[in-house]
Picture 1 (cartoon, rainbow, N blue to C red):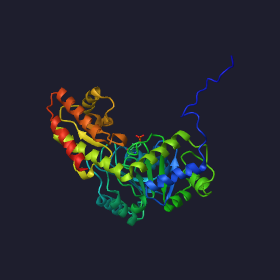
Picture 2: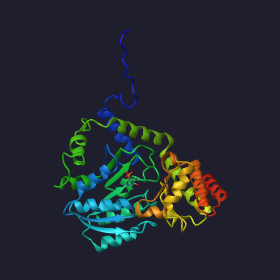
Picture 3: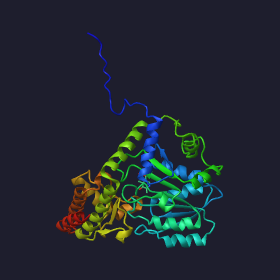
Length: 375
Ligand SMILES: *Cc1c(COP(=O)(O)O)cnc(C)c1O
């Protein structure tokens, strides 16, 4: 009997090396998704990698930053900025609303030395979205470097770094792009590169370094990669962008808009004291909808009950202290679908009934159908 190999080829394991050309072409496709002429650096890690790398690259003891806090990520950015030695002015707004361009203008007038502004575009964790186009105009006029976390907005609503004057725009694949966590990218303006090059504290020869990619990859004509690329992540990012291109970015964004509008209308129709957490529909993010639990009902318990009927529904309670009052409907990626929204509201309605709160399940269903028909 001849000996036969027992090794079975596996689609995740037996991968050819990813070439520099292929890597560059994926970067170009991501750039098209952002309608940007800026350099795009793909970071082969979860979005926190470029988010941190971009701050450590551009901020230092000479930096005065305006850090806008509209959810949990703003807090993290402030901590990194302080850790870099920057002077930080926090501008926190309640999670049920968005920051306005006027508030940014006032903060810049109060501290004219501000030369860095950090902002989260949409917050999946709190369900709000900020008017970046208007804010960008104010930041540009002031002359500060503009850093934007667009992880939760890309794919769900327009993200236009060039048109908005964003110097560092970070995206990740795991929300509305419908991809895996583990790949992310950042577009970098000439101004931001100059700031990094002049920053003695910018990470160099480091996994956090954007400058390494500039000097050793981009400036060399994108011929030689810095290290062996993470093939699985890069292939997943490519597939993810391909799928968006096939559906059309506008159609993907429309799906998210409809999901948000339908969830909001459906929750209002459901009644029983369930309310949109973000007061104004215009401040609500297309990527995810947050709801306020009725008084006397703990959000985390309501969500747990709703998930008993179907654990695959994209429902979660708010993080930390918000777990008591906030319900999150994470209708992003493949979950930006009428059927998912309908089922999520039905499960929440049944859970409310189980807690002795009357809910109008039929009304919710009709509201979802009506919004989706309009969308
Ligand atoms: C999801 C998200 C990230 C990425 O962080 P994870 O919690 O690891 O998914 C970053 N910023 C924002 C605004 C996000 O919504």
